[in-house]
Amino acid sequence: MSTSHWKRIVIKVGSALIAPNQQGCSSRYLLGIAQFIATCRAQGCQVVLVSSGSVAAGKHRFQDTAEPSVSLKKAMAAAGQADMMATWDKLFDFPSAQLLVTHGDLRDRERYVSIKDTIFTLLDHGLLPIINENDAVTTDKLRVGDNDNLSAMVAAAADADALIICSDVKGLYTKNPNLHDDAKLIKQVSDINEDIYAMAGGATSSVGTGGMRTKIQAAEKAISHGIETMIVDGFDADTFNQLLKGQNPGTLFTPYDEPMQEHLHWMTHTSQVQGELIVENDFDANLEEHDTQLTSDDVVAVKGNFSVGDTVLVRKGDGTKLAKAKSNYSSCLLHFISDQEDREFANNAQQKTGPLISDKNIAILEQI
Ligand SMILES: Nc1ncnc2c1ncn2[C@@H]1O[C@H](COP(=O)(O)OP(=O)(O)O)[C@@H](O)[C@H]1O
Ligand SMILES: N[C@@H](CCC(=O)OP(=O)(O)O)C(=O)O
Image 1 (cartoon, protein in one colour):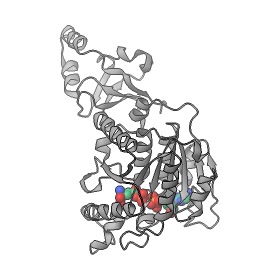
Image 2 (image 1 turned 30 degrees about the horizontal axis):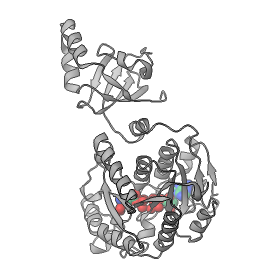
Image 3 (image 1 turned 90 degrees about the vertical axis):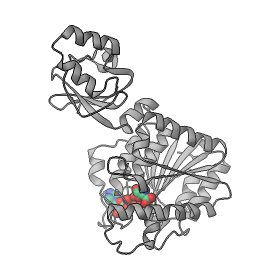
Image 4 (image 1 turned 120 degrees about the vertical axis):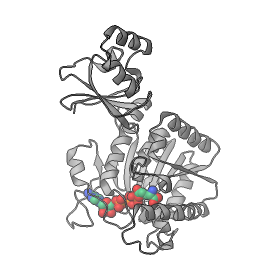
C-alpha cells in the first residue's frame, strides 16, 4: 500500500472519535484526521469522508438517553448532524459539503447514479463530500443501519482506491480486545471467510454501531470492488503518519485481483431483493449465459410484491440461491400470466414483454 498511488479514497470516522465524552462534538481526535485529509488532497488524492456521530453529538440535548427509543435516536441525529458538520468544517481550509443518504436511495439505481454524480461533481470542484446516513428520516426498511457498510457502498460508488475505517481500536483482533487481554492484532487479511467473521464481535462502547462485524462486512464489499481496505485506530495520531509513510498501522484487507464490474457490484452488495422467483430444483441453465431463456414456465412460484425494475432473487425450491437480477416483470403480471389456462395467451404476453430478467442486470450468486 502507498498513499502516493491513491487517486481517490474514502475515510470513515466512527462516533467515539466525534463525540468521545458524549458532551457534544470534540475536535480532539479529529484534528489528526483532518490534517491527513488535507495532506492527501495536497498530494492530488481526492477524499470522501463518511462521518458517523450525529446521534452521539446530539445526545446531550435530550434527557433519559440511557436506552434511547428509535424516535429519540432520530431526534438526536437531527440535533447533532449540524454540530458534527460545523466541527469538521472548522478544521478545513477548503469547503466541505453534506450528503445524507439512506439505503432506500442507494438501492434505487437511478438515485444511486445521481448520488455518484453529486460525489464526483463535488470532488471535481475541490469540495470535500461529508456523507452520513440520513438517520432522522430512515425506517427499518430504508436504513443501511451502520456507517461501515455505508462507507463501503460509498467507496464503490466513488470508485475509490482505498477505504480507511478509523475506529476506537487498532484493527481486527483475534477476539474483542476490550473484553480479552490475550487478543492479538491481525495485520493482514487476504481472505474474508467464516473464521474471520467468527473473531468479529459487536460494539461494546455506548456510541458505536455494529462493532467489528459490520467492519468485516464493509471490507468484504470493498475488496470485491478492488478497494484496499484498512481498519485503523483513529485515537492514535501516529496512525496517520504511518499511513502517509506507506505503512500499515492496523489491519489491511487486500483487494481482489479481479474486481467485480461496477454494475455487478451494485447488484450484489447494494441493491435489495424485493421478491423471489422460485425455479425447479433441477433447473440447471446458466442464467448468465441463458438469462433470456428464463421464462414464466421455469418459475414455479413468485414471492413478494415487486415492480418492473426491482431486484429479485432467483432461487430453487430447496433454497439454493442462483442469482440476483433486475425483473422485467411486476409480481402482478407474473401471477396473471401463470394463472392463465390459455397457454398461448400467456406465451404471447411473454413474447411482448420479453425475458423475465435482463442480461445486463444479473449477479450470479455462489450456490448457497
Ligand atoms: N475481534 C475484534 N477486534 C477488534 N474489535 C472488536 C472485535 N470484536 C468486537 N470488537 C469491538 O468493535 C468495536 C469497534 O466498533 P464500533 O464500536 O462500532 O466502533 P466505531 O464507532 O468506530 O464504528 C471495538 O471497540 C470493540 O469493542
Ligand atoms: N449514522 C449514525 C452512525 C451509525 C454508525 O455506524 O456509527 P459508528 O459505529 O460509530 O460508525 C450517526 O451519525 O450517529
